Amino acid sequence: MIVVKIGGSKGTDCAVICRDVAARIHAGDRIVVVHGGSHETNVLSEALGHPPRFVTSVSGHESRRTERKTMEFFMMAVAGKLNTLIVETLQGLGVDAVGLSGVDGRLLEGTRKDSIKVIENGKRKVIRDDYTGKVEKVNTALLRLLMDAGYTPVIAPIAISTNHEAINVDGDRAAAMIGAALGADNLVIFSNVPGLLKDIDDPSSLIPQIPKSRLGEFEKYAAGRMKKKLLGSQEALERGLKSVTLCDGRVENPLMRALEGHGTVIS
Amino acid sequence: MIVVKIGGSKGTDCAVICRDVAARIHAGDRIVVVHGGSHETNVLSEALGHPPRFVTSVSGHESRRTERKTMEFFMMAVAGKLNTLIVETLQGLGVDAVGLSGVDGRLLEGTRKDSIKVIENGKRKVIRDDYTGKVEKVNTALLRLLMDAGYTPVIAPIAISTNHEAINVDGDRAAAMIGAALGADNLVIFSNVPGLLKDIDDPSSLIPQIPKSRLGEFEKYAAGRMKKKLLGSQEALERGLKSVTLCDGRVENPLMRALEGHGTVIS
Image 1 (cartoon, chains in turn purple, brown):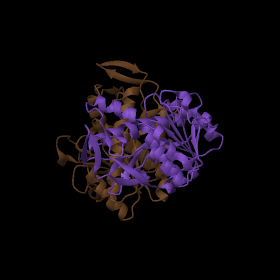
Image 2 (tube, each protein chain N blue to C red):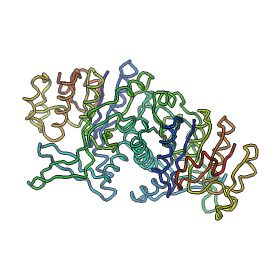
Image 3 (cartoon, chains in turn red, yellow):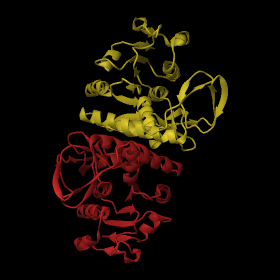
Image 4 (spheres, rainbow over the protein chains, first blue to last red):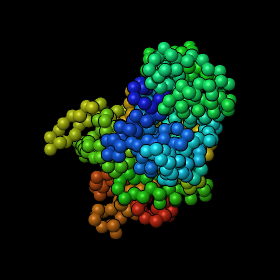
């Protein structure tokens, strides 16, 4: 089984990735698709006159400021538009896809952060009305029910809190938790970079292989969203996922390339 | 089994209907929820600077003008926001709801109208780039798979065309097709009127009962969206649905009242 994470940043071509996903499914692989939607949410938020804002936690991770209003924009852009477009594309390629968010059947359950500590203009600040959290539990029974019946799940990164609220969760870490819970062979995370680079401006500085036991040594090369990809990878590998491939979603045959070992393979 | 259609027009209080749906489910009923989203789509379209337009077919039915762009707004407002909010509300009431649109697992399949004949300013006109259609096939296997595992389906009125395109379908008629396909005991259609009225301005002119064999005689009382509710009812009753209740979604305990016989019962 493979979990494929389609990045939500600008430049990701879902259609190209979907073609490869369909080819692998027709060849007999079981695939679960997880997607992002940050760019689409930014565009919608701007258009609705409520520009996106991002906060940086005291531990250095950046996340979207998600008041309830933004949570609803996120539902629209991610669970409404992107998820439906990916399912539609896969259906057109002969894959019987079913779109879900983590609210459906409590597929992804987690704790809503009742307060987040952020750094704003160099000062610490506590935010209490944010709808973000972290996936702690995956309803694998629902995924297996659908897959055993021939459906391919396509999952939007919204979870449900223990208090029954929809929460915005990081797509990469959600994909990692899904991969771990399913005991997947591989988690392939597509984004708009070729993998983990020693020098972000030099694609030839790609790190091809990282043994999972030495992942900590490579954290220094990660900036921005790559930090969460490494964090998610580490969490998932500790919980039983066999390998993670960080790779480029902007090339031809991205999934075939990833499965051939292109990108950064952590195992 | 009961199919409950929650109207998408202004004034419908989903939370109140969901409370009754949850109570019936906890009492042992099987319920499939179908919802609309016309008001929400209007609001979003306005906010995105692309105000909604409606066309009237030569047969007198009004429908949303749905170019591809509007189809994407519809996905956001209906499959993204409303569907997720209803699932979230039901989850909070202890119902293990799963949100789907008809694109998921080809739940609702139909033919996209490759041309629609409309009347505009008194003249006939043909529109060819519309993404609307009519549900012809329901994937009951997917619904039963989920229901047998304890999940309650919540369905957004988007279908997939035989050519794999997402299409906007009428929610009332979709609910009727679902009810017929499942051989449901009752289809309860909530809207912002008490039922079929002889005089639209006089709630006391409610028609309480219509034998299905005489439905044609009552068509003259239907205007606007009520026409589609009657058309959908007729189609569904002909295909094996046992009864349809048209009733008010704006009152306390709307589902309990409907099941007690309030509203217009067609059987």
